[in-house]
Image (cartoon, rainbow, N blue to C red):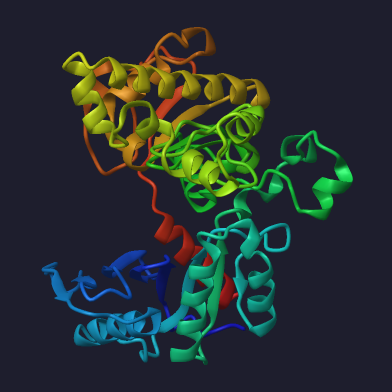
Length: 406
C-alpha cells in the first residue's frame, strides 16, 4: 500500500496496557505538530495531556475524567488534534506508525498491518506478554477509526535481526530452542538505529564506515555493537530482562539463581518473574530506581546507593569492553536515553580507566547539558565519546513514511 507524497504527516502511537503516547510529525521537515499522552485508561481518573506545537504556541490542554478503553482514548486524541486543524481525517495524513515491541523472527522490517499480520502478531504475544497485547490493541483501534489508512508496525526487535547466529543463539539444546523460539532478539531497536546513524553523522562519516557502541540508558537499559550501520550484538535477549543493570530489572544473572529461588526460597514462577523484572536492578539494590536520587544519596554517604551505582557502572564497563572486542575497532561510544543523555557522573564513571581502549572524556564537555548531539571526548582520545539524544518517535515515523511512500 502506497500513498501520495503530498500526504506527508505521520501519527506515531505507542500503546501501553493503560496508556497511549502519541506524536504527529510532518515528514517534509521532520517537525512535530503535536504531542500527547493518555494515561490511566480504564480508570475514573484517566488523564489526557495534549500539546499542540503549531502556530508558535505550545500550551498544553489537559482533560481529566474517565476514558473507558483504548478506543475511547484514540477518539479523544483525534478530537484534540481536530481542534488544532490536525484531525485524523486530514488528507495530509500518510500513515499511522505503531511501536510494536516484539517482532520475533518473522518481522524484521516495518510492515503494513492487515488481518493476516494481526493474526501473526497475536502468535507472538507469548514472547512479550506485557507489551505486545497493548501494541496490537492500539493497531486494531486505529484500523477501526481509519480503515483506509496504512497502519505500519515498527518493531523494537527489527534492528537487531542482523545479528549473526553466533551472537543470537543460546548454548542450549538446539531442538528445544528452535521449537520454542528461544534466542536473543534484543530491544530498543528504533533507538539504537537512530543513535548509531546520528553518531556517524556527528563524526562526519557514512554509517557504513562507522563502528559504534550504543548505550541506551534509561529505566530500561541496553547496549549494542553496530558495525557499519548493522547491529552485530546486543545485550537484551529473549526478553528485555538480560544485559545491563536497569531500574527494576536484574540484567545478567546466573540461571541457577532461578532454581535456587524456587527450590530453596520456595518461590513460584510468577513470584520469581516479578522479583527479577520489577524488584531487582537499582531498586533491588538500594530501594530507588531514579539515578538522580541514587547519586544524591551516594554523595551524602549512603552505602547502599554507592553500591548500587558501582554495580551499575561495573556492568556497563564490561559491555563496553566486550563490544570493543566484538567490533575489533570502534569509532565511538554513544550515550543516549534519560540517564545516558543527562547523567554526567554515569558517563564519567563508565569511561574512567578505559584509556587503553582509546577512550577518555573532557570534563568540561561532559558537564555541558544540551538537546543536540555533541562530542564529550578529550581531544587526544583515539575513540570519540558522544551524547546523542534519542528520537524513537521520529525513527518510527521515518520508517513508516518511507514504507508507504515507496
